[in-house]
Length: 512
Image 1 (cartoon, one colour):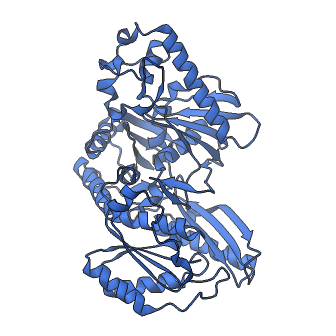
Image 2: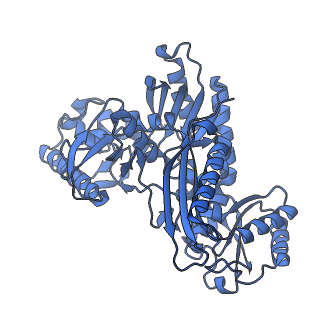
Image 3: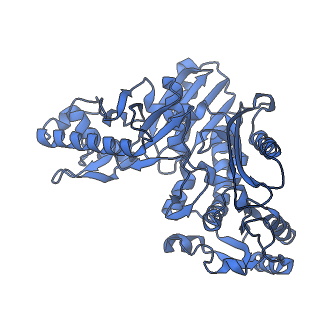
C-alpha cells in the first residue's frame, strides 16, 4: 500500500511517501502561518520526488494541531449550548464553572440544567422532563446555536437520558451538531461534560479543516481517501474524525511514538520527541503510547478521556537561550527559526545555535556562532542533559533501565547517555518519525463503558462487538480486525454484577 503521511507541527510540517514499509521520499518544511500552504509544499515535494515517479497514492494520513491550537489560542471556537440532565442533585457546580475566564468567554455558552439523570446504580434520579428539554432546544434554536453538548449523570452506565434528550433537540433543530458526553468521557460528570463542550465548540472547525485539506489534496492532484490521525496512534476517516476533533488532541507526539516503534522495531521503550518548540516524553507499550488514566488539562480545562500519557517540556530546536543568564526557554522562535536563529543569520540565541557551536549538528553557517562563549555552550548543554534526565525519570514506571528512542527534528539535543536509559537509540529518518507514524497507522475502535445486568462473558462480548463496529465506521476492514486491549474491572458498589469494560480493536484500512 502506498501512503502519504503528513504531520503539522508548530515549527515544521513533515511529509513522507511510503510504499509498503519502504520510505520513498520525505521532506521537512517550515510550518506556514496559514498552515495549508506548508502542507501543499510538503505534498508537492514527496509527490514530485524522482523516486515517486509512477507511484499512485492509496491513502493520505494527516496529523494536525489545528484543534489543540484553537483551544490554546481561544480562537476559531463556535458558540455552544450545554444541556446537563442532572437536577435536582447536580446543580451545585454549573457547567464550565472551572473553565479559564477567557476560554469561557470565547465559547460564550448558553447553559441549561434540567431534571433527570441516573444514580450510581443505574436507577433514575428523577424522571426526565421532556418539556424542559424542548424549551431549552427552542431557546437554543432562537439564539442561532447549532453546536450542542448534552451530558447526564452516570451516562456511561445508562445512556438513556442523553439519547432521548438528543432526539428531542434534533426534532426542533434538525441541523444540530450534537455531542453526547458518554461517547467521549468517563464516569466523572464535570470532566466528561468539559470534553463534550470542547468537542462541540470545535465541530465547525473540524468540518472546515477537513474541507481545506480536501481542497489542498485536490489542487495537488491526489484523489485518494484521506484520514486524520488520532491520539491513540491510529487514524479515522476525515469526515468521522471531524465529528470528534478532541480525539486529535496530542496526535502529533503520538504519531512520533508510533514512528519510533516502526523505525526501531522496539515495542516497549521510552520515546522523546524533540520538536522546534517542545519535547514530549512518553512510553511505548506493545508499540502504542501508554494511555493516561488521570486528569488531563486541555487549555486549562480538566478532562478525563482517551489521551496519551505524555510529559511535555519546554525544550526544542528553536528554544530561546538567554545569553546573560543562561536560562533555557520557555519561549521559542518556532517556525521563524530559519530567519531568527543566529546560525541562520538572525539575532536570537537558540538551542540549535548551541548545538551547532558545539559541533553536535551541522546546520546553517557555523561561522556565525564560532564566537559564542565556550562556558555558555558547555553549561547550556549540561542544563539540557539535566532537563532530559529529570523528566525521563519522572515518566519511567520502574527502576530498571529501559531504551530511550530519540526522534524529531531536534533529537540532536538529547545526550548520548541518559541516567536510567539502557541506551539512547538514534535511527535514520528520526526527524520525520511523526509523519512516518501517521503514514503507517491503522484504524481502531474503542469502547469504555459500564455494563450491568449481564454476565462477564456477555459484557466482554458486547463491548468487543461495539468496538469492532466503531472501527468499521472509522474506515477499518472488517476481516482484518483484531483485539488489542481488554480491561475488565468489577464495580463492587454497583448492583447487577456491574463492571467497567474497555476494549480496543485495530485493523487495516478498507478501500473501495
